[in-house]
Length: 139
Image 1: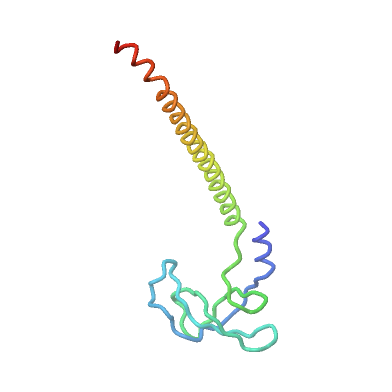
Image 2: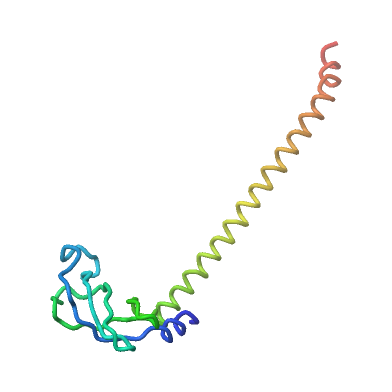
């Protein structure tokens, strides 16, 4: 939620004018947007330019609403509270899965190491006692 608050405080929406035709072929974007050059008047009164993703129906000369930060750089809209909540739950869930996977992997790794050690000890013991035991049956 801090990200939502920070982005909301740093970004504001302004009206800009489309100055160029799309840079990519229409319909190539998954979200039905096109990338175009836009211009607007900044807070200091100077003309600013940048590129923005706008709906496909916008042509040069039309106006669009875009988001800019304090430095007048074009940005995406701030993250919504619902998106932040979903991201938090997803991150928490993936962290829980990662911790569990680490625990299981560590347990299996430790078990493998201990079993190898135990089998090596059994081999050493068998090498010591097998000649004694097998000799009594071969007399």
